[in-house]
Every structure is written in C-alpha cells, then in structure tokens.
Image (cartoon, rainbow, N blue to C red; front, side, top):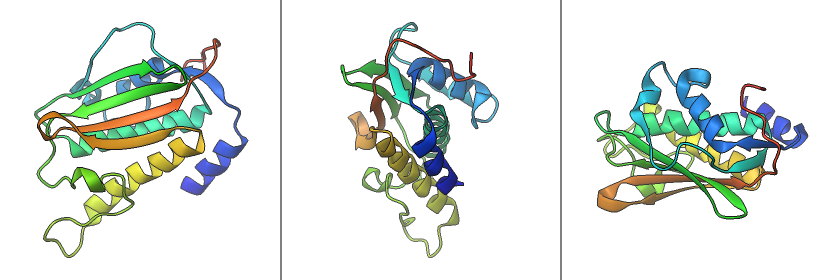
Length: 177
C-alpha cells in the first residue's frame, strides 16, 4: 500500500488545497479518525483563513490521517491535542501539541524512527506500528517538498510539526468540491 502511495505521489498533479479545511475534514471522520475522536483536538488560533498548500490530494489525505491517528495513539486520553496552522511565506505549517503522553509512549527522540524499543520489553508489536507510521509520514512529506518534525515542548509536551510547500490561489476542498 505504501509503495502504491509513493507511485501515486509521483504521478498525481499538485493542487492548491486549504490545510485548515483538509485537517478539519480529517478530524470530522472524513479520514481514518474514529467517530468522536476528532473532539479530542482543540484549535489554537483563528477559525478562518489558513495556509494553502501545493501537494497531491492523496498525499495530503495520507499525511493528515497518519498524524491524527498517531497523535491519538501517543497522547494521554485525558488531555486535548492542540492544533494550529500558519504559514511562513514559503511553507504551510500544521502544528500539533500533545501536552501529556501515554505511559508507554516512546521518547521524543525516537518518535519519527521506523521502529523503537518499548522499555523493558522483548517484543513490541503495538508500538512498532506507531513508530513506522510517523516515519512513513515524514517520508511522504519530504517527497512533496515538506517535512515532519518532533520536538519536546513546555513541560515535556510533544510538538509534531508538518510543513508543506505553499500553494496558489485556487483552492479545492478535500472532498473534491
């Protein structure tokens, strides 16, 4: 499936898409986020506007689904996941802040690696998938001219930052409309 996605990225034209609209669609269940789980995400910043990004639609959908799934998996269930979008002039930015992580979450330095060990475990089938997902998302982001980074924020929070090349004036919503 991942190989097909990369081939699609190489063949699909770039589109100017609204990062805010695509992210909101992913959280509303339009993507792979379980019903109701999108309510755990809280917006920081203005409702309107936001950056346009120039990427193939399937790549953006994959990236946002992957980020939302992994954020839900890594974050403590009792705290919201705060998100914001911005632009730097050349890049559109989506930032997720996970204020508190699950007890079994890997160290921030390992979150973007393909696989990472679970402390004290001989086998880590559940965590291996989580680490692979963010590594794959980083690869897809790089394939379209962007990046995915992870860093430690205030009080040990995890900040995931997706950057993508900014788009033009024409906007297509994620649902094709």
